Image (cartoon, rainbow, N blue to C red; front, side, top):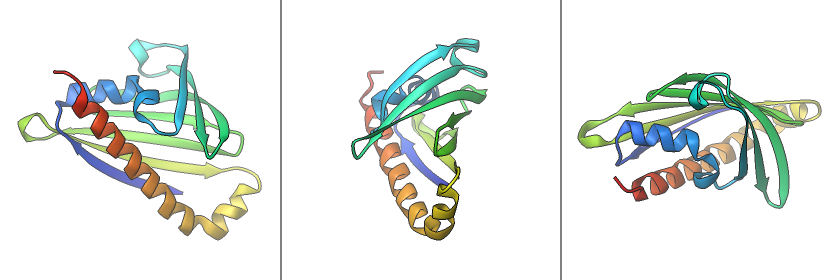
Length: 149
């Protein structure tokens, strides 16, 4: 299941890139923990971490790795879960007057029985996934714009 969402933030690209990549647990409403396992290249390519999410009382752990890192324009992480894997790619575009457009492209790949569930109800889940991504990026926007210059 793929989804894409974008938001414009009234902050310069460098600040948005750094905050987005280094403070996930602060701006994400579902990530409750983001623990560094092995830092490489100042948090860039090859960095390994573990993300813990919580939604509707259910906690899930996702070991992850940074698979693409081009400051300040792009980053991608892959998260491996028991039921599904997630690839989240972010692009950052500098706009006029110190503003930044952030686009998140996500690809969720189900495992086991969830493959059937995704096949049958994927259209409904995609709608919910797009709404969740929009809310996440709106929260990122609020947090970034509240940062001091």
